[in-house]
Length: 403
Image (cartoon, rainbow, N blue to C red):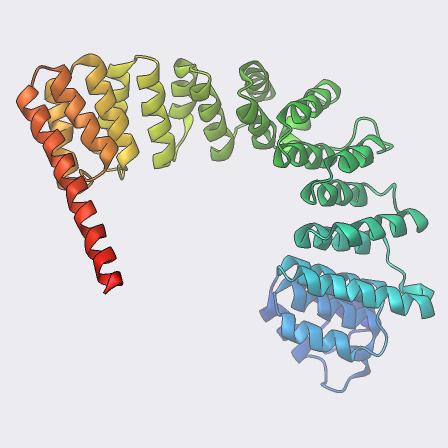
C-alpha cells in the first residue's frame, strides 16, 4: 500500500504499528510513521494512538509512551492496560498501580473504560511486584464484581499475587475454584512456585502429582525445573525419580536448569551414580555444581571418583574455589593419598588460596594421617602465625582508635 502511495486508513496503520510492536522494532515503526503527515488526523485516531503507545511500551520508551498517553484526548481500556503493563514490566510497580487507581476514577464517569480481564491481569502482576496485598484484595473484589473471575489469566495472576504476598492459603482457594479440570499448566506452575516460595514443598509436590496424573503433557508445559525444585527442598528422592522418569518417558530434552536441579537432588540423597549420569548430560556446568559433585563423592566414601572430578576441573581450567579444594583434600585424607595431597598443596599455594582456614586444616590433616608429622606441624604453625598476625592487626586498630 505504501509502495503505491495509497494513504493508509486507521485500521491499516494500526495493524502496521502493532506488527512493529510485536517485533519490538522501533526502526520499522518510525519508517511507518514517516509515511504519515505530522498533522494527519490518522494520528489522533484512538486505535492508531493505542497501537503507537503499544509500540513505545514494547520498545521500553517510557518517556515518549507516557507523553503520548497523557496527550490522548480519549483513552480506551487498551490505552490504560498498555500503560499499566508497561510500568509493571519496567519494574515501576507503584506507578502502574497509581494508573489503575486513576483508571477506576475515570471509569466512574465513563463506564466504557472499566478494567477488563487483561487490565486486571496486569494490575495483579503489579500488586505482586509491589507486594501490595491490601490493593490486591481490593482488585480481587472488583474482579468478582465485574465477572472476570473465571478468566484463566486472571486466576493465574491472583494465585501469583497471593503467594508472593505470603497468603498461600488464599492462593490455593483461587486454584481450587478454577472451573477447568484439570487446571491449566500455568495455574499449576503458579501454585507450585507459590508453595515453594512459602516453604511448603510437600503441598507443592501434591499439586505436581495431581497434574501428572491428569495430563501427561503437563510436565512439558509447566517446566520440569519448577517441578523438581520442591523435591530438592524436601529431599524427596522418590518424587524426584518419578519426575525424572516422566522426563525420559515424554522424550523431553531438559535444559541446563532442570538437569542441574536433578544433579543437586541426587547428590543430596547420596545417589551419586544417578547424579554423575545426569551431570555428564550437561553441556555447561558451573563451578558450584562441580563442587557439589566432589563433595557428594567424598561424603559417600568415593574418594577416587572425587579426585577424578577435581583433576578434570584442573585439566579443563575451571576456576577452583576454596570449597572445591577443601573437598579434594578430604578425598586425599580418606584414601591416605599423600602424593595427591602434596600436589593439591602446591597448587593452592600457587592459586593464593592457602590462607583459607578450611584448606590449611585439610592439608594439615593429610600430612598427619599419612605419618608426615613434621609437615603437619609446619602447616599448623602457619595457621597459628596467621591467627596471631590477625590478632595483632586488631590490637593495632583498637589501640589507634583509643588515642
